[in-house]
Length: 337
Image 1 (cartoon, rainbow, N blue to C red):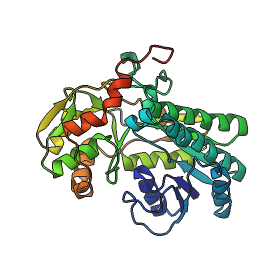
Image 2 (image 1 turned 90 degrees about the vertical axis):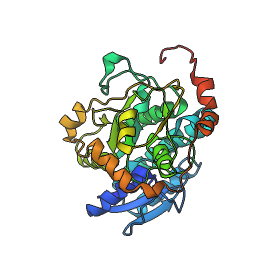
Image 3 (image 1 turned 90 degrees about the horizontal axis):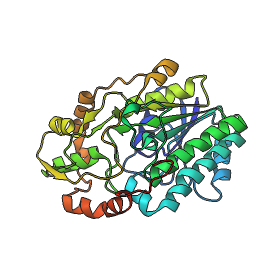
Image 4 (image 1 turned 180 degrees about the horizontal axis):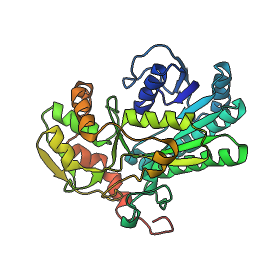
């Protein structure tokens, strides 16, 4: 396999590159930045630097694909996080939708064999209890711009499969965690927040009462799903990637060990995320292998990675999430609401 990994210097992308190299594949990393703290310093691969949202991105990516004779694309590049997407929806559209379209068109022009797209479970929004565990045919109800742009990207991926016969698979990732998850930037993922707080002896900032649960899936298992999707003969499908075994935030705190301070419950967030993974198990033969307890231990073994990460406090979190409460507290009801 000759593979291009967009977002290769990010959290999941760097782990995917590591797996592909260990499996003996030829890899090209495509990213916006030449250097990233989150990137594992591996050798044996090539790099390209392109802003996928730029007007000339399609041509540049197409030339890169042809130069390296790429036959598989793993499209992970994009903007993440909820609050910035509320503040800067146009930026999120440019990168997550138009940028995805640039990658798709470049893939079509270069006649790649398959593209695997990193979608998000956030597109399900707040599922009704009858849709738990959440299967791929559950209603799509994005609650904020990030989720909306991930779904629009997924629709373009499907469109290129149907209209242009570019084989594609979309993976709806649930709560991915593992070493090298982001340590800088905006307030976001719970693991990075908690580990930085633990290093500095600060209490864990638990939202609500901590009984909300998330379907945490370890990053190496996610990478296995990407490779299985690429190597299969399946195309035009979407698959959930999770464990189907959600854990509460209080269970996470118990494993990490530390004091707690409680924050107000946030609007627009589900009380539970739980993937129905029966489809990916049946069709691709994929199953998660890393238990939650094993995964948390690995995170603690690598805790020094978060020593320079921002230490969030109730005050700084309150300031960072002002727009979250402002715009998501009373959403207008509609066909997706």
